[in-house]
Length: 386
Image (cartoon, rainbow, N blue to C red):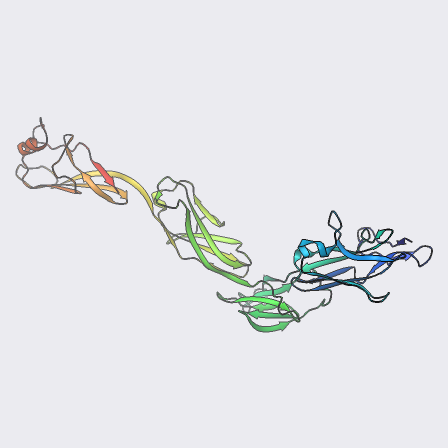
């Protein structure tokens, strides 16, 4: 009752038709096709004929990669997508139909039948189904003066379509049909065009579109608030592109390009010299696009604080004297406090302090005791920034 077949090791999916050793009254299943390749989203029919020595009580299909063979009509992953077409006559095929195919449906499918005495078929090789999506591959055209910047678009599948091994491809630009070709398609891409393809006869099953990077932007992702000198700062470049962006370039405005080709750019310890406008460029095989710039404003405490006196030289009693405080700070200094002999000058909160009628005795009376002879000493300066 058993049937036998053979195959070359390493190509077990290409086994011979089953034969009986003693006579023709044995069990066997013969698949119409051992390998099938179809498009993602389409419908496939997998068929076979079988001979059962005993009366058949039921038939069903299984996936061979399941640990426990299960009738596909009871598999939740195939709910609403599987139908069986049973044979009406002895030599008619039994058909498994699967609709709305996904790449996860790629597997080997086996036909099984039951009799009152045994279950037969699921241990023998069946039909291997490969489900492929369409992809547009982008390659540069061989550089010539006439073809500079052009790209070659190739509509491809991961396996050769069983029912259409040499298909005609329909090419679309921005949802409009531009050509029908059996060979690759050459274009000169621009910033707004997108291209995709479909197999003629399956125009509803289109590939993902390919396009140059668009909506490229740069932002500060860390920290979220003020940037303080000495902190760690991370910039990120974002762009919508297909194929995905494979190279990023970073720039400082009015400067050279920066070292780094990743999606993010990091300042481990940022300094005031790093303040400026930054932007990035995103590039894929189809083209590139630069972003607008983002401002990096590094804040730091007052430094290099100094005091100058006007007029310079000797100060004569009764003359007008102006003291000026200078300091480097970001944000700029908003409050100055003046001191004479460790004591605060009256109303001394601006960047400049004016003494209209310099008189040492008045100075002593107003702000200090025990002033030395005729010299004014500015002991120290405090500055406060917002």
